[in-house]
Amino acid sequence: MKLALVGVGAAGTRIVDRIVQAERTTGRVVTGGNVLVYDTAGDAFTEATAIPSDRRVLLGDAHPAVVRPDDAGQDKETDAAADPATRFGVGGDPDAGATVAQADLPEIRRALDSVDETAAAATMVVVGLGGGTGSGVGSVVLDELRSAHESPVYALGVLPAATEPDERALTAARGVRTIVPLADAVFPVDNEAWRRSDRVSDDYARINDRIATRMLALFGAGEGSTGAEMRVDPADVQRTLAVGGLAAVGRQTMTVDAAGGGWLARLWRLLGVGTEPSAVDAGKIKTLVRRALNSELTVPCSVASADRVLLLLSGPPSTISRKGFETGRYLLEEETGTVEVLAGDESRPGATAVTATVVLANVTDVPPVERLQARAIDRLEATTDEPDSGTRAASAGGESAGGESTAEFEFSAGAEDA
Ligand code: GDP
Image (cartoon, rainbow, N blue to C red; front, side, top):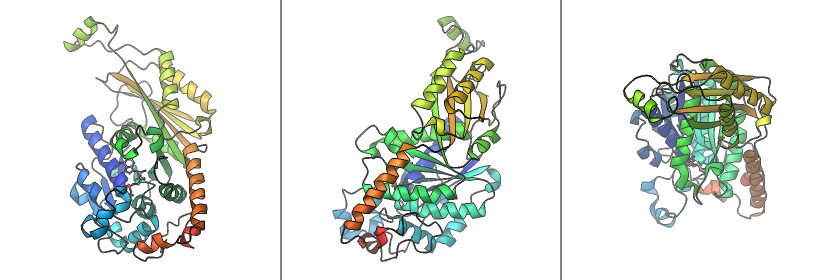
């Protein structure tokens, strides 16, 4: 299915850029350039080379809550070692982000007009939930899209890693509570689960790559595929996500070789004499699907808590037999105890691997989100004890937190603003 993408903040911008780049390298067309990004800091725009400049919108131009690299003055020196996302823009403050978004609503709406709803089956807002722009501006953008579009509006929200400051966890926890009721479905992406180093920022390129691969596999499924055993219907993706709530995507790949895998088969292929790989054993498909569930989910969650499941198998023609396909589907029915397992396969001539992509929709047992909520509550309790707990909002330009945002934050009436 075709998807329009709207990135908000640095993470949103980088991830949308990565998805557009991946479309170009893989030939899988999902957005077809129907993308838009917003930021208050703007430094991520310089990295977003795949997004045309008329699709990048800088907000808060003259707003006192927004700090730009050029006017950071003395702070620039003292903050040089700080987390880039809290140095510039709205300084990591989601309330300041929401205030800036309210002030710039006409600009936000004008830019949203460039997102072509008729060319997409759905729109997805992409944000880093720990960010002031991602969470604060992102909630307002999501709310705007929801009122303007009749088609579904999804959200992809990155959860901060455990090594990130508690303040980020609080912002993200509030962000989750704000966007879940606004979006038709939310894909949390757990930076912690995919982190490989002590500084998660060192892992961003790799994590963003993985997000792009999964989103293209999911939303690009069925676009232009022929000759499959049980052809993927792009509407099945929408149907799976229609149950709302949090969704997780798993993916696992297994390389296949031409029949027999020997030098003769490879020679025939080089000579253009078709020796397509033979059908993959049903037991191997089962292992592939199980691995997709166990190790590579966008957010760790209990598979059994899913409400609806979608299995997509893709690979060279003839590798996916009906038996293999049914075995994978049966495994999912067993693991989830779910009545509704939608499934389809996609023929990818010339591919050298079979891939299983699994979507678990409306999962309710999601430990990283629970941990985030617990961390946020601890942080709020600690903040209540701090004598100067109100200074952060004041230092971001004296605006009162929350403002007129229709996207009210769940914890916004808490100690932080007291
Ligand atoms: P914002 O611009 O104020 O929204 O803030 P950022 O987008 O820079 O950061 C918000 C959060 O998103 C951080 O706390 C990280 O958890 C996450 N993040 C930032 N950049 C990236 C990125 O490129 N990839 C991923 N996966 N996460 C990111």
